[in-house]
Image (cartoon, rainbow, N blue to C red; front, top):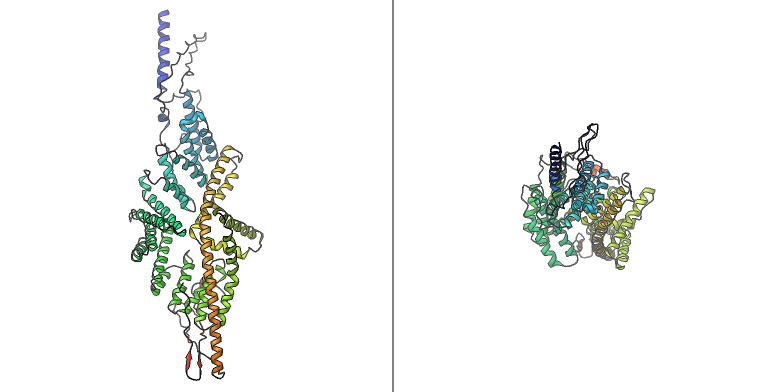
Length: 627
């Protein structure tokens, strides 16, 4: 009996030791229960757009196997059988892997909450694990889970902050490659993909995932292009040229079959245009047009992007020909922009100048009528009034020309004065944007209360936001502020919690960086527009002077001719139109479907004046300075 009991004790002890060794490689099996209870569901496989977390529970438990195992004391002998004959219970309380197993279970529970769509719960759990000193081996994985959760919550800028911190740990960090992929996911959701350009440029030498390599080339090319343009504005042209060259080389790496090919080719064409290489710029833009022919295989989002890129290429083709004084070719490409598209008003305005150059004053004035309609009252085209005054001047309609110049001065002289006062203050870049942000807030408040906004400040804001890069950055700031407001209102997240404070601080840092960038753009744009308005006001003064001189000459010649009555030349015009059109006299009303189709019937004021010696026709007037 004693020999049998000793043998049983030895076998029981060796069984416990075997279980202890087995626990180093894999978690112990769950204890059997009398009745099955609902268990926590295992994390499901992520959707294709969500990178799957690397590793599993088994691998993570073996992270510190290289350390020597601590000697453990043998477990006490099992208690003797009770009188009722109950079997003894085996315990594992002395196992030193229990803590890590619990940590993994906590992270698995957070992942399960994420997969169930309980994002507030998953975010709080991940944040607790990140800040638990005992969870140091799983801190990066917890932060990665927090970034994914914020993305699913619609907090794209907050998610960008978490992934940026993971990337800053270095390329050998776990989840580095996965965090790179999330940069692309975020860029597809934000209003402006340039919010990730700094991160893309910072890790330009990293091993980017193959399926995103071409998009990476495009985004990095955009980064260098935007940086080069900013350097040009501060007269650092040599450094700007190097950035444009880098942008061109990256754009040329993208194959023709890639969705980003057309956009990259457009950037390449712009770099050639900047360097004055017009033949190469023309070929690049024509290739953009070929690459963006409608394709039924495109998704709706891709079709919109390609269509916008196609219109931008048409606009650039028109500008290249306009710069070469090939005005009819320019008009052909301007005419490719369909009514209502984002580039349509720009095309109307610029084609008005091309029509003016070839003497098609009626069409030019018709375009300007569209631009002055109530539908586009908030658009910023100060030069349109100067062009209109020039056309009237060249057709000897001096009274109308003078009246238009006075209207221009009444409307834009206060804007110039406001810009002059602003630039004299020598504000920092952030203060420039704060000035514009204050205008936006006042205008929004005025619209809510039904009050009229300040017209001058409204024009200053429109003037600044006519810069596309500044507008995109401003949109990103507004989007980020909306995320901050949404975060504060989430019912499942206490605004006083450590996680909420951490996220708000992260968003504030990103907002400050965007404001600094937007302020630099705003400062450069407002200073540029101030100089442009100074030039336009000077041209207006010149037109008034020339008009006064011509009117004086008319009076003097009439007196010399004995006061004979001036003869106004009859203007011949036809009401004939195409079969699909209808001639309708304009009576001051505007219809949306008529915009862009106006033809102005210009009655020329040039007269034939009979003097003592000859007949003089005043059909030619001095041409104003080139645009």
